[in-house]
Image (tube, rainbow, N blue to C red; front, side, top):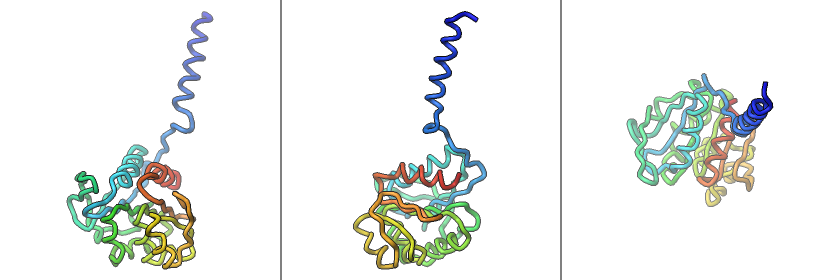
Amino acid sequence: MRPWMLTTIIVGAIWTGTLLGKEDTMPDLKGKKVLIVIAAKDFRDEEYFEPYNRLRQCGATVTVASSGKGKAVSVFGKMVATDKHIAECKAEDYDAVVFIGGPGAAEFFTNATAQALARTAVEQGKILAAICIAPVTLANAGVLKGKKATGFPSFQSQLAAQGALVVSQDIVQDGKLLTASGPTVAREFASALVKMLE
């Protein structure tokens, strides 16, 4: 083998190693099923698209549910197709249940179906995640009592009122519970969710 060929191979290997290093590896979530719950109107774009796209890229099967079947509209007017009405969803069918925030998520704060879904997810040992104001739904369902959690700053008092141990961090994991503070950490929220599913 000529010296220049060996150099090319070594440099190529280094370059490939850099591109395919640990930070860039794509976890394999094939076989994993995730339910994402969004408001029929005014769910937050980043909080939905970051985990949705990341989960799909990793091979997970993602089902999108809402209070209206067929479509939902984001804060920024993006139309999203929904697969199911939340009333049709059972936690036992999924590995993780994820509640997305945005102002519209307030519709689930007192929604008995959403609260039952959250409680069943915890009872069955599923991953339960929520971002922005959505952790209030979890708190009202009683599943954050005595658990470390976070949420959108102006809604953290509602978590504490239901017994959550509010932590001033952007991403908080307590066992199989994952909560996040808002849209600015949507990507980190997605990464944490993927890691929990691995």
